[in-house]
Amino acid sequence: MNVRVVIADDQQLVRTGFRMILESEADIEVVGEATTGHEAIKAARELRPDVVLMDIRMPELDGIEATRRLIADANHCDTRVLILTTFDLDAYVFDALRAGASGFLLKDAPAAQLASAVRMIAAGDALLAPSITRRLIEEFTEPRPAPPPGLDELTARELDVFRLIARGMSNAEIAAELIIGETTVKTHVARVFMKLGLRDRVQAVVLAYESGIASPTRRHFI
Image 1 (tube, rainbow, N blue to C red):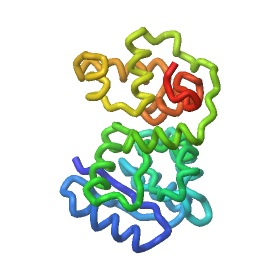
Image 2: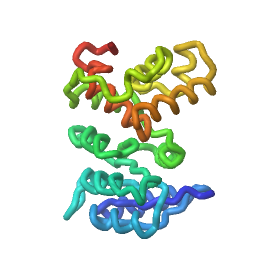
Image 3: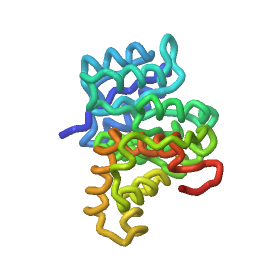
């Protein structure tokens, strides 16, 4: 099945460029465009895409608030948001992740990376460019050492996996770190998400930093 995408950006050249890139892929279909946050929400409600490419700075309603409203709508829980940003907008990225975005992509990323990112987000494998994400979270979060609900339900191995997710590791990297099979890692990740009430890896990273499980101040995980 094709991955259905809505492109939300107030610049026509950007939308046209992204559309050309994505529509050159056999398994990706651009089903709509939007120029404001309000239009992005309307398009998502009407077209039910798998992924919304969401710019941060748009008129009337910015991409962060549009993401928050879209993700909060239970009728569209299957739609995921991929935030588009530039380096000078780093200060806004963490707000976007907290709003429920499943990841972010720099606007100057290579064309192949854009298509790959859309597929990753659609598949639920949320965290793109984990090294950049870790740097942003380390810079813009303040750890709050209050254990998240459900943390005491995690087994020792699941807690290990949670900490490694918080470091931005992929399933393959976690498997290598813990010397276990990747299938086993996927099972642990699913259980961590279920017990902590998480939607995806981005929420796991945010929760780990906000609760003090991961500490940006000390640059290690506790």
